[in-house]
Amino acid sequence: MTADRGSTVFVIDDDPSVRRAIQGLLKSVGLRAESFGSARDFLARGPADSPSCLILDVRLPGLSGLDFQRQLAEAGAQIPIIFITAHADVPMSVKAMKSGAVEFLPKPFHDQDLLNAVQQALERDRARRQQQEEVADLRRRYDGLTPREREVMQLVVTGRLNKQVASDLGTSEITVKVHRGQVMRKMRAESLAELVRMADKLRLPTAR
Image (cartoon, rainbow, N blue to C red; front, side, top):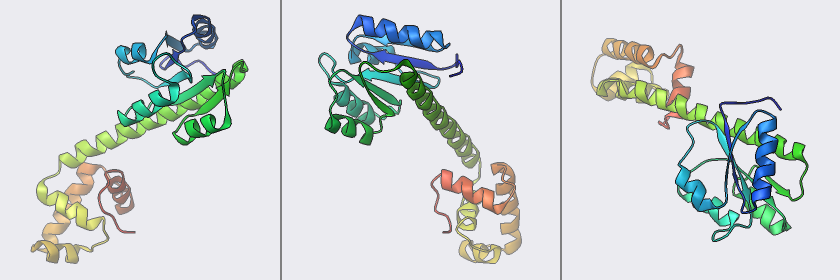
C-alpha cells in the first residue's frame, strides 16, 4: 500500500488500545489518522475536505456502529465505512454490507486485511469526490448558458434535429445553429455525444 498523505482515516472505537494500535498501523504506511472514542466525538470534528474513510467499531457506547452508519446515510454523509467487531455474526455483517460498508472485519484481524480495506475505501471516496467536482464544474458551465441556449441544449440532447428544434422554439434554423454553436463552446463539448454525456451527468433528459 502506497502512502497517501492527502487522505485521512478516522477511527472510532471505545477501546483506547485498539485506537492506538490502528493509528500506529496506518501511520506506518504514511496515512494520516485521527481517532475518537465515540460517534459523538467524531461528529464534533466536522467533515473532512479531502478523501477519507471511517474505521468503525460495531459496538459503541450510546450508539451502535450500525445505527451510526444509518444516521450518517440519512444525513447525506457518504464517507466509506470499514466495520471492525469482536462480536460478529452473519446477519450483522450482511446488514452492514447491504448498507454500503466497504468491509466487515472480525477482531482480531490481519493488518494487511485492514490496510487493503482502507485502500479500497479511500479509492472509493476519491472517485466520488472527483465525480462531484466534475458535476459541479458542468453545472457552472450550464448555469452560464442563456435561457434560450439551455432550451436548445435540452432539445438537441434528446435527439432533435436543428430544423425540429427551430420548429419547437418558433425560430429559424440558422438561429438554432448559432445557439447550438454557443452551447458547444460554453459547455466545452467536442461532439454531440460528449454533450449528451454532460447532460446525463446533469440529469437532463436525453435520447435513449
